[in-house]
Length: 237
Image (cartoon, rainbow, N blue to C red; front, side, top):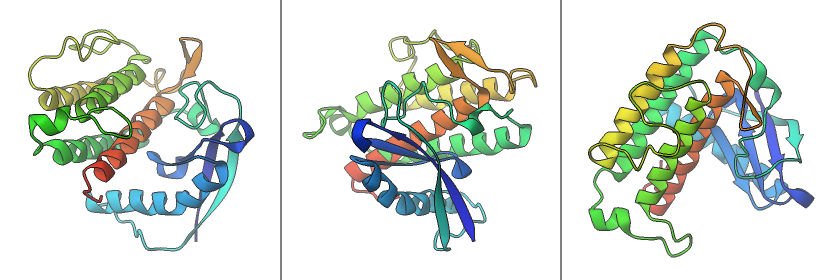
């Protein structure tokens, strides 16, 4: 039986928590408490397996599995929200070419699913603010673009794209087209990484980054907002 190792970031007094399933890179679960986040993790795993199955991977979302907590970080800046300062032990392992291609595929699939969800929306729907969070879908998509661009840029400049923090301001063309264009250039940069770049530790803004951590955060961040979009639009994944 498969056992998934869970890596937690837990806020003070075991409040707001995010669970990272690093055996299934990209899969996360969140909750207002550690216990609630752990309770939500099995369904989060099954949802991610369903995503992979839709893309043709040989996985069984209905198979039985176990989980175990491998690490629980309780010190950080934004614990429970995908704290970018965190480095889990597996993040320090060199990124193999095989894993890089596997994660690149997932980046392509997740971006395609995001664009499919919002592609048929009207301009009014994209601009409308949600009552509970006050953020429009456009603002969410722009946030995704800027955050993920920041992650990749820790590995070095991406040719063809403006600098960090200006990706939205200097975008060319329609937003959804720009998202496709940006993802293609991000993937090109990842594929161009040398063996040294795939294994080195980089200090950026007083945080440690590795190629493996960059891909983990990109996948987790997009998956988090893909789930948010599906719930908001009432279109189950």
